Image (cartoon, rainbow, N blue to C red; front, side, top):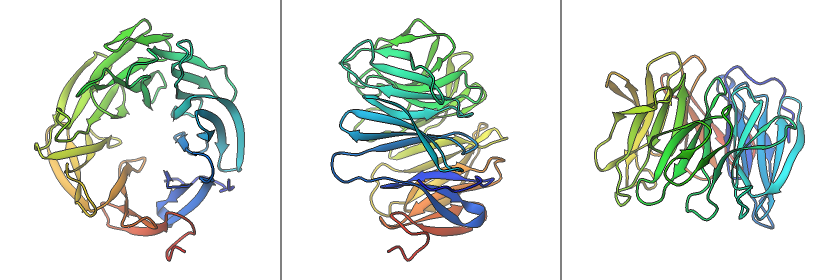
Length: 335
């Protein structure tokens, strides 16, 4: 770990092969926050960050099927162990950094499911129970609503198009997913998808697909309050979509769109789309790993790159950019 001091006003955490970086676009800087050793036994590190960037929930896997939750404070360089158990993975931290959701995979039906823990040292409680041996079980935590009441998860009923996004009320007690729906508690199942982004009680749900999957890619609007949804965008049959994100302060969203047959250098297009059906192509690149907005929605950033050593950050509207090293160092040349 490194002590990085105050979090900049605009920032983004990115994970590369063996590092977590803090991106500061205003100062064109990428600062290493965490580095981890991938040698020896199989290793994996996953993290989720609070909105203010002051808290990271990191799940490290020191050995097969064992996960350790660390609560990391990058400003001071502190890291404390919160929990170590078998089968824990896929952290999702609430916006205020006070509650962590995670998967726990187990052959024990009393353990298998989606769990919540109040930070830093709360007692874990299960939110979603599920069948142990069912394919795609348990649900995958995706994202928290801004008020912390709802957790979006991906459920899987199996077969083509089996993945659907649902919203679970965390205050309503434990619920159980039986492969088709939820029993007990309060949960609302929405459209098919693998990615979700909240605004108020509405979810943008992205369904990415492939020509052999039997379903079409789409972006849908899921109204959690009513439990209904409608389609916003369905690309041409040979095209795919990835990671639709709301624009802060506007009734519009950005989406990454490209061909199903993606290979090195295949162009991906960044589109700004409105709920009224309007669309504008903003940017195109042969490699885009992620997109995010500034907090006020005035700037849109894209993580781009061309090889396994050098990455770059582009501010889409102005065209301003800067490179950084994916594997080590601060700026190219990446040695």
